[in-house]
Structures are given as structure tokens and as C-alpha cells.
Image 1: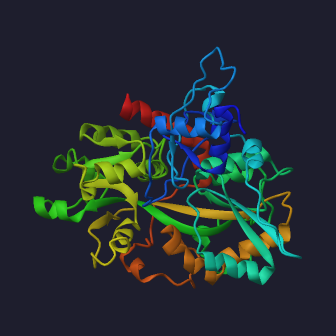
Image 2: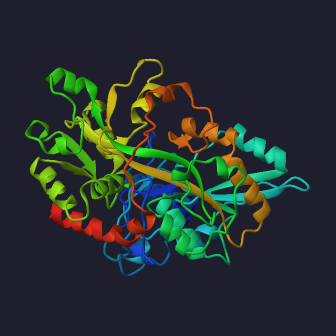
Image 3: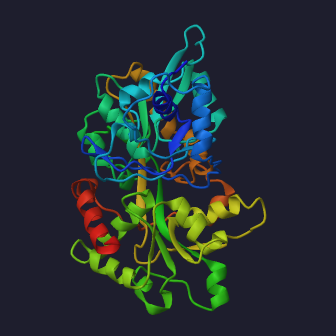
Length: 441
């Protein structure tokens, strides 16, 4: 029995049974906690009184015998039916009680696995909460390699990477890692936690996705963050949808746009980087000041922006939102036949979308490095790659992969905005801070 409710909270966090209702405002070790927001997740929220009841129940229904004399600050929490990514942000230091578990805490809180069959080897894939793959696809790899694959979801993309960096090459949390994207690419390589491995078939992958000449990180999927608009709203108002970033500063689009905060949202950061790339470092803030004058609304995360402020959700009053190029296709997919074409559209002209690429790699110090290499090979193969679109709503990097039918409504852009990973790594914090001063102050 756990006598301290705070310890229970930390273990529940590590196991993914508990999520923070608001992101912790901190950096640790110079690394920003940053979360990849997953699309279309149904969540069941319970307020803090229910959580406290659960904690007391787990503790035997009684308060601690010797309660602390000094109040302990505990951040708000939400019990969820499954781990659900939210945002995260750099901000001032806060009490240790509000922090997510360290790498060591998370590792020690991992539930034990089932007993392995004779000769079977366990592969641990460390990843973010948004990772998904079909059960049959994983089982095919397990059968072919007499292995058991354990998916260790370690929070959002940034937090998962941060935990692995904290663990270090001498004590990795697993054998392979998936979920480094191009906004954290350079930081991951500088940490020196991935071994060099030339994945089978990498020569067939387009060069635009192959960012590491030393083959420490292998590209797995890609997608674009774009402006989405509500087709029905613009038709009813007899207003043409915006076509470019510049259009959003015009009077006819005043009070129509909602974007996510780049300090707390993955698509929000991508959109900020889009404006830096499009307008230049010396002029992107001028553009944001024009958006502010045109009454842009800033949301803390994708889910709030899309489901609460976007008109398409039926709740909001903003018919333009920062989302994904695959969002219109996902609307068709989740309509269960109600829609035969997307009710939303994308703004894609003049490089108004930002390319995101996700990578996987073999961890240095892995207990089973050869099996990890085989799994990275498998992830790049046609079988796994064809499973990616319907599981994670992104595009596979393998051009031979088969796309599901509903992806006919998605956009795989031939020309997207991007920035070199080294430039992003060197300037991310500076750009976010400057944006905060210009837009929120």
C-alpha cells in the first residue's frame, strides 16, 4: 500500500494513468517540455475531487497518519481513459511536486511484462503518447523475429525525448526510440544517444526526409501543419476563403482566425516557424502585430482551438484555425459515411504550410541492439509504412507504401515551408519569447 498520495500521483503519471490538466511551466536541463498534440482523441475528464477520492481509496481510504505541516503544492490533474497529449511550455521554476517524473522515476514505474516464451526476446520501443500501430502489424514483426514488442509511451514528444536524454546512453529506457521531429532534431543528435545505422531501404526514401548524413535518425513519417477553414461558413457568408498568409491581415478576415500558442502547442510552434520562414527573421513579428490588430485569438492547444473555437465544431466563432493538412480527410474518415467530401479545406498557397518529419533510431547502450535495428528496418518497410496513415494520420516516407482510400481527401504538399533543424534549435526559444512579447503582452 502506498501511504503518500503524492507518490501515488507520480507513479500514475509515469504509467500514463494520470495527466496534468495544464502543462507544467518549466524547462529542465535546458530542454523545453513540449507536447505533440494528437488529433481526434475522445477523453473522459474527472474533476479534482474525484481524483482525491481515488487517491484516498488507493491509500486505504484514510489520510496519512502524519500529514505534512507545510502545504504541498500539487498542480491540477485529470484522470483520463488513455494517455492524451497536451501542450507544454518554457516558464519559471516551480515546486518539485508539480514536475513530471524524472527518467529514473518513469523507468522504475514501468509495469512488469508478461513472461517471455523460451528463446523470445523483448524489444522496448520508447515513444510519445501519440504513437499508434495496428496490433497485427506488430504481431507480424514479433512472429518473424521471435520477439515481444513493448511500447513504452513516455508522455508528449518533447518529454519522451527529454527523459531519454536524462537517462543517457549508459542507461537507456529502451532499445529503440520513435518520435523525434525536425523541430527537435538537432537537440536529439547533440545528446549523442543514437547509434549510427543505415536502415535497409533508406536509399529509396526521398532526400527531403533524410536529414542525418550519419544515419542516426531514420525518417518514418511526415505531414504538414496548415490553416484549415470551414467551407460552409464562408459559403453562407458569401466570403471567399483566404488563400495566403497575407490574406489573414485584410479587414474582411478580421476576428476570423484562431491559432495555438507556440509555447504550448506543436502546431502552434509549426505555424510560428512558418511565418519566420515566409517573412524572414526581421519581419515575422510585423506580420504577427498585424494579425493581433486584426483580432487573432490565441488558444493554448490544438484541441481547444479546433473543438472549442473553430466554427466547424459547432461551438466556436472562428472559421479559420491552425491544424493539419490531413484534418479534412480525417473529418471524412470519422463521419462514418456522413460526408463524401471534406467539410473543411486547407490554405496551401505560397508555402503557407510547415513540413513536420518524424524519425526513429536505435538507442546507444540498447540491451538488444540487433533486434532494434531489425525493428527500424521494419518501420521503414512497406507493411509498417502502409499502416501509418490510418493509425497516426500522417504520410509514410516510403513511396511504395499504400495509402487508405480516405487519404484521397488529404494533401501531400509538394512544396512546404521548412527551416534547417540547426537554425530551429538555435533560435526556438528566442523566437517564442519575441512572439510572446509582441502578441500576448
